[in-house]
Amino acid sequence: MWQLQDAGDESIIIYLAQTPNETVLQRIRLLVDLIRDSLAGWVTDVVPSYCSITVYYDVLHCDAQAIARRLTVLLQQFEADGAGRAVRDSVERARQVELPVFYGREVAPDLQRVAEFAGRTVEEVVRLHSETEFRVYALGFRPGFAYMGETPELLRVPRLDTPRRRVPMGAVAIAGPQAAVYPCESPGGWNLIGRCPVALFDRREDPPRVLLQVGDRVRFTPVDRATFLELGGVLDG
Image (tube, rainbow, N blue to C red; front, side, top):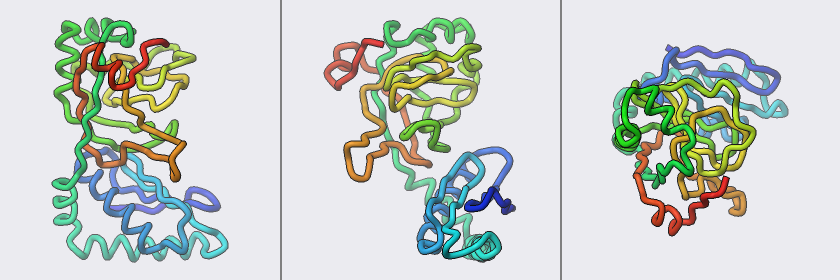
């Protein structure tokens, strides 16, 4: 069951569950598209997250009560029109993305520590990470930063006690059940286990290109040092 909650002067949150899972993720994807299409004249942005959707609305066209009424009608119609079947179809159509990753020690300062945490070899950690199919649950922190799950249980190492001041662009990271690739250089407290040469965000395009979207299925494919460099990867940092 869903719940609406006022989130300020220009936004309202739709809560769909307490814990994320495949079904919740696909419901969120479908509802985001439905809200954008149905309330195009009222909403300014629709932001999906793990178990919720934040709807930002134009106060010049509606108020909190009006947007809540419209969202309630949409949600009721969504459930009445066979949401279960739509969710199943959406799961089958989810986009699959492969990202090359160089797991070399020179770009993976935390890989050995993750292996020790898991009680496995570095090679086994790489295999576990690269054999997992991750799902994009949310976007945030930086443009193009995709929060992915679920990291295998053995590799769910906590965040660093002290975040790094600088994490290089393309760094492949894990923390608890989550995984991510840093789309740009920034501070960060996740564990760095590799580096991806593919750009996740390009502000030079109009509109700016964001590679990963909520609902995508993502696999990390190991590549050697030479291939990483051929694909545009950078080793410094």
